[in-house]
Image (cartoon, rainbow, N blue to C red; front, side, top):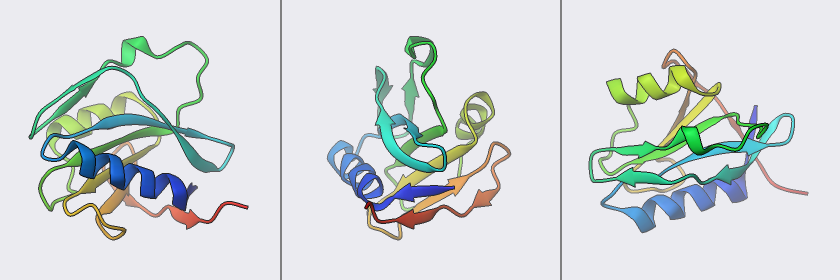
Length: 121
């Protein structure tokens, strides 16, 4: 799986803008490239963000989730793991200071996986 560099930079900017609160969104795109965010209503604070998955329109293609941590740790919490098992295959956590090295992707079980960052055509 791949992620567009433009989307990754957008995610990092969204995290910076929300800091010190967290933000959360869903990941979508074409068959093998994550290139879109789906924003649903969510509630956030400095230690959590809860997304209202029940408001997702039927039939939307969702690869997984993305959310930020206001600390310098991208390690998934127990709450993150519960979200990972509910929705999608790819789960990105971005963490402070929200630069291009401050993110990780995980699978449903919480194992770190690689996403190739690609430039758009």
